[in-house]
Image 1 (cartoon, rainbow, N blue to C red):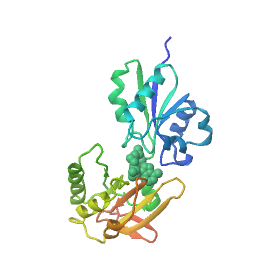
Image 2 (image 1 turned 90 degrees about the vertical axis):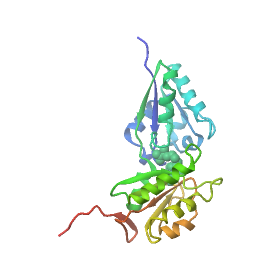
Image 3 (image 1 turned 180 degrees about the vertical axis):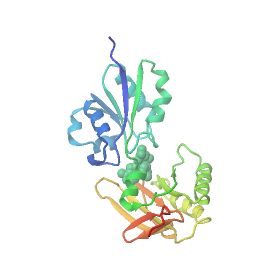
Image 4 (image 1 turned 30 degrees about the horizontal axis):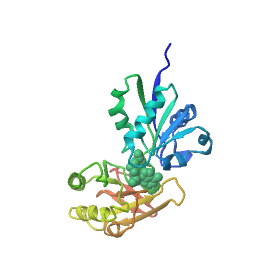
Length: 246
Ligand code: SAH
């Protein structure tokens, strides 16, 4: 009987082992080879370091995916490792795009805790009602489209989580996004951000939209912009769902 050739695409959550789902941990434990971006491989718990690890640099995503299929074709239990959830700005979709070229292989996607959710929990409950997740990276999405989405989210009074708020090359992107949002939203709107969720040096801050415009963030930050139902309660952000209480 021929062995099933499969790549498991695993989201490892924000960073620490306690944020990895049991399903993802079990899959990693069974793996013979783990393919991933070096930063994520380095975050894996100690005991997985003994397994064979393969990686490619940051931009070489297609090569990394093909590497995973080639390992599976050798009959090895292969994991493609992503941070957070593999389907949210992760490798799950590219793996499925490439899959038809490897007809002897199948793909299994294992859910992980995406940064919008782990970060929201750190701040309290900013995503209590409808929300949208928008990445400010224009590597794969034209900036005009990102702008349209920011406007739509602000206009429709959604809570917003922003991924990729800035990087060295895109230092002013968060400022540009805030300027667009400020066309629709008041400067006092409740916002927050969390840096390095579940990793060394984790940091959280609550601030207003005007303050957010001036804030320093980086590529390991997730930003939250409240809706009209969001308020600050002590050290928490909460978005009221509209319960009428006695
Ligand atoms: N697949 C990942 C997202 C990858 S896009 C997920 O589901 O979480 C990369 C962006 O995700 C970063 O720029 C940042 O905005 C966010 N992010 C991922 N991990 C993070 C962490 N540990 N702390 C803060 N933000 C994080």
